[in-house]
Length: 572
Image (cartoon, rainbow, N blue to C red):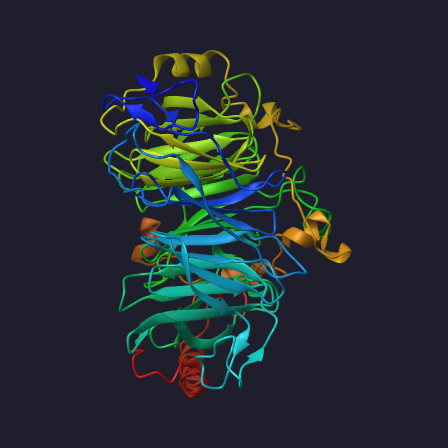
């Protein structure tokens, strides 16, 4: 149902001839960096698309149509091919991989891998660099730029990046979170520091999210040593609360986090012995514990483990997840996909990515926007699979290299990054063409590595036939930063010690209330988030605790109001 405008000339764009086309690439592969795997891609919703790629090299790459070409909402063979428009590399010496980028409409933010990282802000309409922000440049005024004379520079290697168009959040390996807000000064507009660096933990902060709507946004970060989510109000810088995960995870470390609105979808699991680094092996238990899938609304504190969360047991280590408020999808190192439909409350759907009698690790999964919602997965077997909500395969496309990351901008367009350093742009079937592909269904029924009732015993000791072997290129990095672990700054899946409640503490648990009886009460402890597992106390002790916590909250608020909020009258 698709045809290339000139099949022998891969530089031309593909033409979609009807609304029911299957998946197909729309241009030749885009080269990010030879010999370095792509770990993150972003894509605009226009066509020809604007594409950004970051990965295990010292550079960031931006792609788009040639200069002077006009954007179009439809595919056309007359459109120019996508070309590299920008390649950004930090000043020598290079000390880390350029792994983080985020796109909102026409503004793209990319963070380099230096010990004191810089954020580069691009307008992707013409790929001009609008601003460079030194993450570690901080002044007493709270709005320091890299060139300010009174700015002091602190270590700030970026470990996570979030961006919503007006606010930039960068978490660091030093345990801090830095924030910037879009401001207008005269005729100029730019991002200025919003809050003084927020101390989250003494270990790297790898999970930071901007949640909620403008005017009431929240910043949620995970503090591994305390096994808790810490939440601030972004507009005021005031500490909103903290939520300990012990009641849900029982000491299993947090591995994956996705978010939608103010709800965070979490997967707790031990690291995969087949893929973890040497440092991870030293910090994880030898015997893997059952993974746990859970939800947490950081505004209300409601949440808990998902029903049938035990389906994740013995199906490989969770490797990626996707969440859009309705569907929560988790994929594993053995190629198993599990999808919870939170709108209907039906039992989770289960599918297998591989189309042969082998397991294929899944490296990326996304929920495709549109009605009805669909699911896209990419695996180490080089295949892309499109699924419906019930995890019935709709279409399949095979690329030239294992798929490491995905970005889906519209119901018809997606981008994949690969292990060999290339970026593929491809079309998706129309949403109304949602009939399962009979050949794919039959192939999986006959050959696929599908979960069955005896799946647990059948997979004991199973090693995936298709696994990832990520590649890095340290370039001119010093020898101390040239190894894979050092250059990519891999962070072990580690959390502080978990102390389970004793039998006496468990016996003190109060009778179940209406929420407990319905099975919907939160398993996240807010009142004891920074002190360990929650336990019941007498009314007098509870009143004393509440009074003490209110006093502590007021003290923290005074501290934040004194030095935490940028003294800019435009910050409300």
